[in-house]
Amino acid sequence: MAFVFVVSPTLVHRRLRRNGFTRPPPRFPLGNILDMAKEKIKRDPFEGPLEVSHDIHSMVFPHFAQWRKLYGKVFIYWLGTEPFLYIADPEYLKAISSVVVTKKWGKPTVFRRDRQPMFGDGLVMVEGDRWVTNRHSITPLFSMSNLNVSLSNPNIISFSTKASDKLKDPFHPIARPLLMLEML
Image 1 (cartoon, helix red, strand yellow):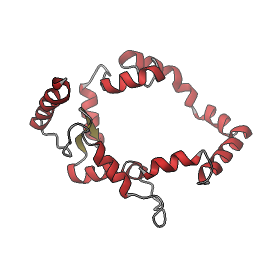
Image 2 (spheres, helix red, strand yellow):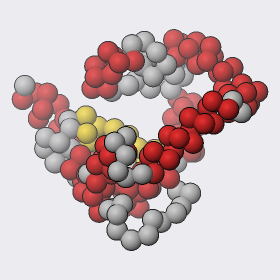
Image 3 (cartoon, one colour):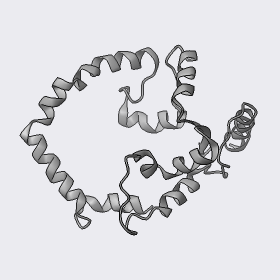
């Protein structure tokens, strides 16, 4: 137990630091989860006018935007005892992708165990050649001709409009859980 929660993360942390990866300081045993929650709480959705921006990433993940300013476009953050590599530099990602030939980036074991019952062996969970095969089989579904047919369907337009109206109403039961999540 001590190896999983203390020794192994410490060894990984040292190896990453030796390789030059900067990171926000993790706190045992939650890593950077508390920092993420604090940054989210700072952005109270009910305070003042809503800031409209095309930078959706920094609105949804304010902690990543803050860390990107402090640590650069490539850094490590921790969810519990599991490290994650954050890459916002396309050139760096291109260089890594050319080295990782097998298309097996490796999904973290914590996600594989948690999400296997929900997603099974679908596109979200598979890796390597199976991922390539699955992706090629669904790609035609997202062609412009298929999307235009779907989006011009009156039933889809009607449903989307109704759903959007319900989500805008803070007193509607569907919108309440979303507002509670935003408050965290």
